[in-house]
Amino acid sequence: MPFRDWTPEEKAGAHIMAGFPGTVAPPSLLKRIQEGRVGGIILFTRNIESAEQTLELTHSLQLAASSSRHPAPLLIGIDQEGGRVSRISDDFTRFPAAGLFGRIGDTSLAREAARATGAELRAAGVNMDFAPVVDLLTNPECTVIGDRAYGNETSLVAPMGAAVIGGLQSEGVAASAKHFPGIGEMAPDPHETLPFCDLSLETLRERELVPFRAAFDPNLPGGGVASILVAHAVYTQIDPDRPASVSPRIVGGLLREELGYAGLVVTDDLEMGAVEDSAEASLASLLAGSDIALICHSEEKQERALGLIAAAIRSGQIEPGAEDKSLARISEAKGRYGEPFERYREKDRLGRLLMEMKSLVGCKAHRALAEEIKRRGDVS
Image (tube, rainbow, N blue to C red; front, side, top):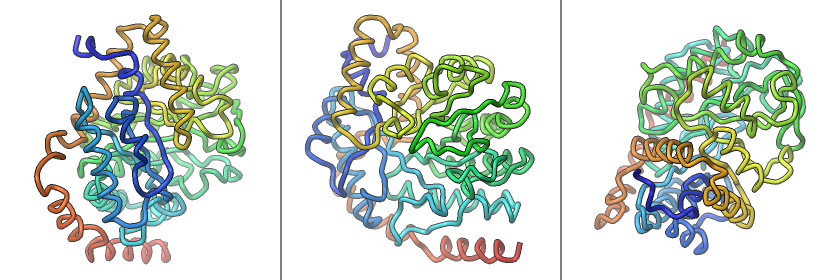
């Protein structure tokens, strides 16, 4: 087995995608990456002040990963949807929210904007984007989604989501369709409290799940969407006791078995108000069938989650065969969307990347595309 010489802590670390404060990686984070205690990074506005600084940051993170005992590129993710959910600095090209693309209704335009976004993110060292939102905005009071959705009809949202996935992944950036199995019917914000939904499984199959199925299209670049992000919400008619993000019925049953999804499954941020204990939820998410636990702020919580997961691997609570399959999914995604780790050690590599990035990020062609989209949105 390819992972038999990994320690339980190294296996557990592969499942942790960590956030951190500041625009420079803390020494403790670099040390944990080198020790295999962190397998991925998520960036926020707090981490980004310019494209050049972002590339220097991501390069330092990947250098740390290249010197670990099992060197492999990090998955470095970001929530870059466009509109109000935008983490990048002003020197990048910023595109409007999904709702405007939905009003225009042109999938080719959505694909080109995603392609431009993907190219600029990749140039800055970001290889994963937690986009697109494929929730159907069936409840206008669902402000946490609002204009982040393309609309309320499957006939619009499904092709728009697939177009964005194709654009991002054609530029080497792993996309993530969210928030499975769909939260556009709910009013409460999971950042603050745990929402409940009484939609039946039949309704979900006929409506909310349609854009996710479109995201699985093997003809898309990358062979279908690289990852699915699962919501912190209770679907009372499917699993009344657990949020989707930690529900074996929803992750293992609905997503993995019924829909046949074989890619990465990622939780939403486990430090949201909807989650009582992020460390326990991290373990529960893996037992449910997920691969990566997002813990976006606290190093202490990340380390406690690692300890719980490692103990579960050591005891056999996480079944060895299932663990190997999950690690294989993570490794496959890193192989597809990450640069070979040896490249980060090449002499003057950062200087070359900076030169390439400056000619691409915020370039005239991308900014002209953004202006054209805004113009078309104003008249639609």
